[in-house]
Image 1 (cartoon, helix red, strand yellow):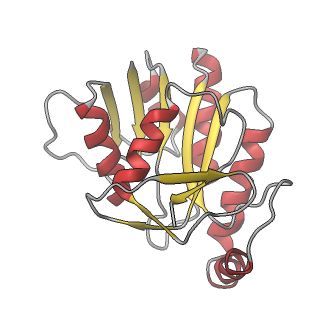
Image 2 (image 1 turned 30 degrees about the vertical axis):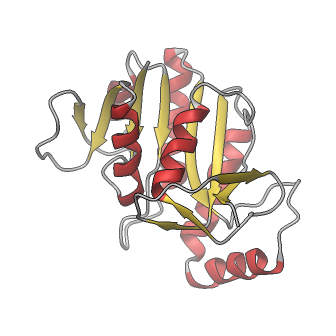
Length: 206
């Protein structure tokens, strides 16, 4: 499979790229700034908020993954990037899209624990623009027929440890996830339709 990745140079994205390379996926990576990468990875320089760049990135891909994060004080990037990804994927007849986001995103099935409710309130109080933008991103996906999965995450620990994970459509199982465990979970979703058109919470087992 050929996988197009947005956010692969980020902290958790680097773990994902490593996982996919180990499993011999063909990778095409979107980067904002040119740098040296393994020659086995095809690199496209640009910004996910530019539709032409996204079209170039996903050409010939079997699936698209986004682990994009907020860039400092930039305007929120999440819904703009996903809107472009949706349009480009529909034009190219690519169906599988996996994207990561935070705990603050709300779905009708949610039964959030008090700590998750508090974390969501904190995000809206301290980062209102980006938090609302992530909710908009989810609503954009709801309106599509893509085989999308939005993975809602607690604190990501940048570690090579890979404890087991639990996924839930109603509440976050714990307050952390290993970046290595997350990379393995995302990779598994490329061959798994369990969470098509769904937004599971994913975290390490307690």
